[in-house]
Image 1: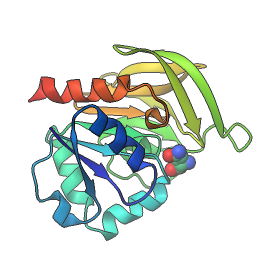
Image 2: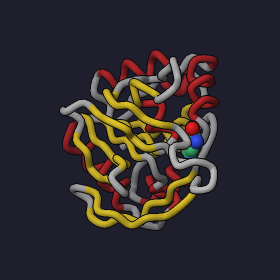
Image 3: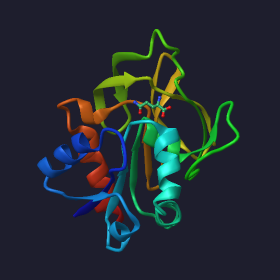
Image 4: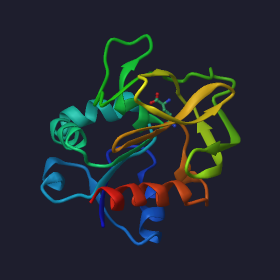
Amino acid sequence: MRIGVLAVQGAFIEHENILKNLGAECVEIRKSEHLQQELDGIVLPGGESTVMGKLLFELKLFENIKTRIENGLPVLGTCAGAILLADKIEGENISYLGTIPMKIKRNAYGRQLGSFAAEQEIKGIGKFPMRFIRAPYIISAAPNVKILSTVEEKIVAVEYGNQLALTFHPELTDDYSIHKYFLNVICSRT
Ligand code: GLN
């Protein structure tokens, strides 16, 4: 199984380490040539969504990735990656890939509460140690978006067909169950 990991900025190596540990092959996506191959899934990591969004355009990755996701390529977007997937960003006129009908708020917990941990149940996965870093939360989502988890009434994980978006960082824990879930989604769709 070959997973593309967007590697232009942010915490991509941690995702690669876990996926490799679980037996997947990882390819780093940094330029458009890297997208000229079959991929079974793609990971959009945490980092800075404004920087990643800009680089997606500048490096000519945007159209290819958006089309592939729209055509059913399984995607895991974490934190900034989830922001890239949202079709609406609170208080901003732009969105990026916009493939999930949901509204997300960036840096939603304010500066003081920028980073925190929580242990919460995720549907289909179980209790998971969540690490939030200058995290967004999902304000609302279309009725056909499945809400997988909330923390203090804020949506932190959703699934929308082939797309999985989390506002926290599963790659910074030693619990691999989310990545396993993602690989299972891929297996069930191919
Ligand atoms: N605050 C970042 C943003 O707005 C997201 C933080 C993260 O990915 N850890 O893009």
